[in-house]
Image (cartoon, rainbow, N blue to C red; front, side, top):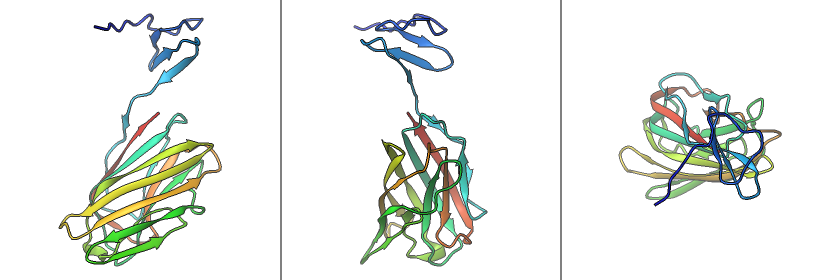
Length: 195
């Protein structure tokens, strides 16, 4: 049986192997006496996707290594404009994305998008999405994405995957559409982020 003991509620002056400290966040010390912050999974604030042409999550901490974007019954009033997830460092990055999104139903159709991680919208305004997309850093501001979503009626599954290199440290994420004018009219979106 193991026992977890906190050595201090404030950071000690010299790191010692095996210490776990608390100072608003948890810190652990390894065998090389290197102190590192232990990050937890943080949930954002749910945003109703019932109006507007984009949904932004800003102020993401510099220590973030993974983001999960969650869609619950999300829809737009548009006919065919694909959804986009865009990342940013200081401002939203709108170019340089690699990858594709595929709509899998009785037939499969794909789209290669360079302006964001895509979510294929083949059924127009009647399409309602559920699912999630995971976005993870490989280091050096390089981020990769993969995800699976489905329609409410089970008629199709949508997959996405890609990568993008940002010009700096990620601090924001936007969900929008390719044309930028379709408005959200149903559902909700939230994120989880972790170090």
